[in-house]
Image 1 (tube, rainbow, N blue to C red):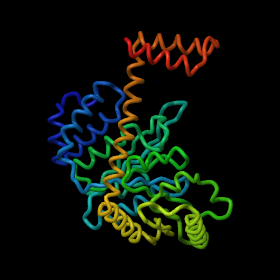
Image 2 (image 1 turned 45 degrees about the horizontal axis):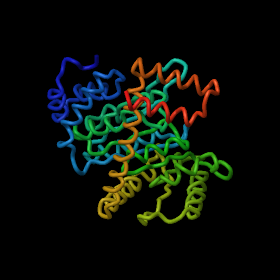
Image 3 (image 1 turned 30 degrees about the horizontal axis):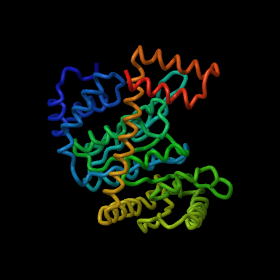
Length: 329
């Protein structure tokens, strides 16, 4: 099992001392599917909770394939660490449904940032989890923040209706889009646009500069069709370039402005409270599935499933009957 030679206390001590090797092993524990590893990771994070910096933040970055998210994140990250501010990037790669493998190429695409002493780039497989992130993303964020990374960027797999989950674990959500126009705007789901706190049109350089500016105007106009946000925030739409550096300073300025405003208004605290509530119910679902994995209970579940398939009862009624049976065991 991963890292079993270290106790939870040894992990905590190493992480608080910003030991990269210990942090890496703890992140592997958090992403492990072994029950013993998960239990150890949970104990590590429990002990780290009092040590999490109160001003630490996490920002979700999502967008369609080809938008240049990784290149943009490296450019943004290099600008931040140049100011002496530590930064961690959790980059999620899709897992193949056929082989179960992932390429995990983000560390290569962010080579300069990955080698910087103030930065950490941690690629992780999605494990087939829908939502754009990983099942252990929240644990990974906590571990990185405890190690001194006050800003954690969460790069999701890609854009779509399910990738709105990143908004349930981030203090701010940034949507990165390639230059597009006209009907191309329909390719991005409304759901992710509605949860975005900032929209960036990337690749605003060279022959794509004009298209990027056009897309910026179109998205700005489209946002006026949405109801005003309760917090009064007007979502910025910026044309940026990872290649030329255009707009990168403005991205960080708007990020700082949004987070400071959300903290002052209390919306940041309210958002985190709701996120923890959502996370709790996700954990309840996971725990219930683990209960059902017990051999005897799995057999009862299979019998109920077969009864539903054979038309021996109405599926909702059979499901309720099965749950009542489980609770009596």
